[in-house]
Image (cartoon, rainbow, N blue to C red; front, side, top):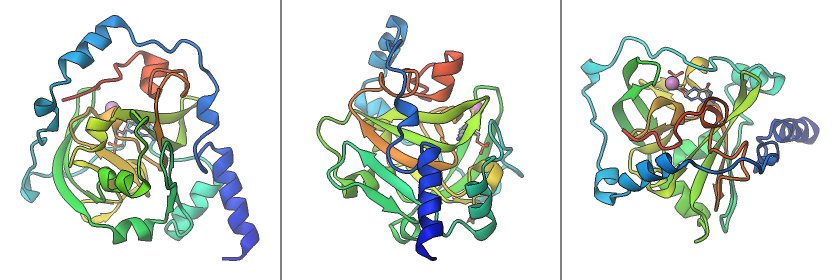
Length: 249
Ligand SMILES: Nc1nc2c(c(=O)[nH]1)N[C@H]1C(S)=C(S)[C@@H](COP(=O)(O)O)O[C@H]1N2
Ligand SMILES: [Mo]
């Protein structure tokens, strides 16, 4: 690909807050406290043993006929539409923030890493669930490659879509980030992710509720603190609709 369109693509992704670590996401430092009840809830779940256990995995015949798309089911920007049509040749996933070695990985590079395939149940707070097979590299391996710094406490997932006027993002702590079933999925039931389910990349964080599983992933940022990110509560639903940040299941 010639240089200029590539620069155009990268500049475009950066403008979406998706090129490297997002500036869009870092505008509002106010209002950044977790309430006491949530702190208690998180503390109660701190027991590592209970958090490191695997979510149930299922047999191929248990899979649901379809995994419906929820929240954003399409991404309305020209760069995304163009990349979707071409099979995402120029899509890059940034691993950035508090890491020694920032990474920018193509879909092919992500596919070349050791892969995990898991058949798991997705649970949405809206009251539906779906069993499906997901494949991709483990997030922990990527964080090890990027050499996460000791001051990092949280991992932020930046997304390409805008939902109800706000950029979608999510975050987890390092226990969930390094959980063996936390993968960057590029396949659903053995085929590339459909657009409605987050093409080309989406998180699977199997010990967390559905809204944590960020779709249309563009960047993974290691941070010390969530307060300066977005509106300070660690995710789209947390910022806009008061959902709990800790959504462990
Ligand atoms: N980028 C992005 N990720 C997202 C959402 C979204 O709207 N945008 N919706 C979340 C919610 S609430 C759920 S239940 C799941 C839905 O995943 P699915 O569309 O593959 O069913 O994605 C989550 N991740
Ligand atoms: Mo959801």
